[in-house]
Image 1 (cartoon, rainbow, N blue to C red):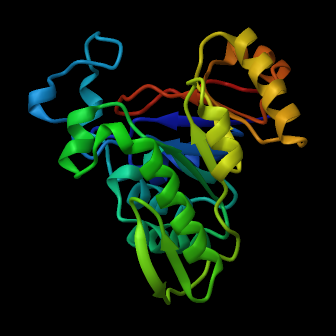
Image 2 (image 1 turned 90 degrees about the vertical axis):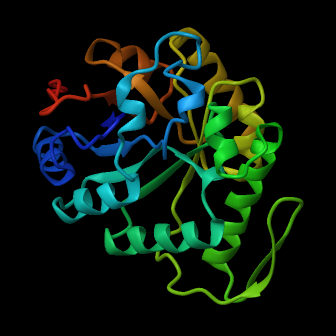
Image 3 (image 1 turned 60 degrees about the vertical axis):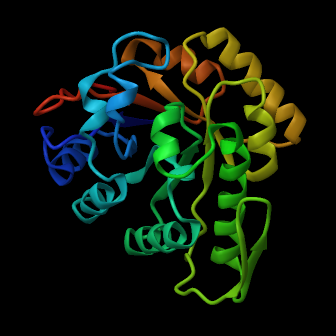
Length: 260
């Protein structure tokens, strides 16, 4: 099992190039960044579970700009999102951004996606919270078409465009990891994803659901688990996870736990 790191990377945290170099030197396989474009004042500092929302949610860097610096400063470190809120992006523009990052990094990009939970945040991007999962699927499918077809087109309920040209194409299509723990997330993984990115705390449930997902798929669906600790790595590996992400502290110079 590979071990990577995830972080809410804010302007108060060490530069992503330096953080990435430290992670690579410490034997970490990857660096994944979380995305929130903003937090609406009207929503308040209230988390999904009703508790207080950490201040760093409203201070994160753009993940793709930060990941470009991380990739440029390292040789092998995998870079990615954990997760990108696809419903807040234009798919044609995002397809271009991801292709550029993938090719310029030498094919090191992992694209974790999620539909989000802050309804006012998504509404400010013109997204109806009730249709966000359908919108996420269509935007991912539209990007796949752009990445693979010389004349790409997509006609859905939420995304609709006639044939377009867009180059360059990704030398390796970024693998899409669908984030979440809900009862329908496995359906989404099988329909339009390449892998799953859960963050549930119950590792027994994780093991059962990973096995069930792979049985349904008839193959080993890759799983990246968000929220591991050095103490839980063995149990996470036993659950069948391929990559475990340890969440670093959002501090000026985040401590990097030993994984050796």
